Image 1 (cartoon, helix red, strand yellow):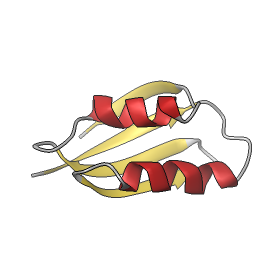
Image 2 (cartoon, rainbow, N blue to C red):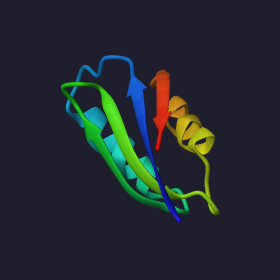
Image 3 (cartoon, helix red, strand yellow):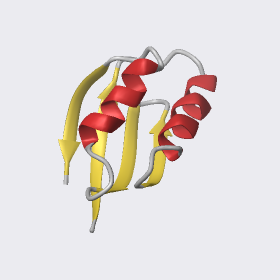
Image 4 (cartoon, rainbow, N blue to C red):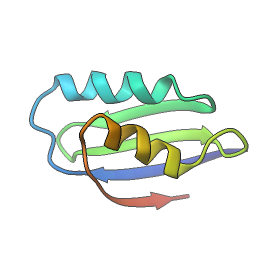
Length: 74
């Protein structure tokens, strides 16, 4: 079953960050969609919790150099 998460990041400073984060998350097995909202510095992701976790998504984002401030799952 697909699970949704909204990850609040530090303020994004450049539009190229969007593509970088979306591309990295889309390569994670189990991620069905990943969308970065530049103005609010949020990532909305939908993923299969049997294949990946929100912690994995946070790890991918942190490895790109962006801090994850909070996570809201639904």
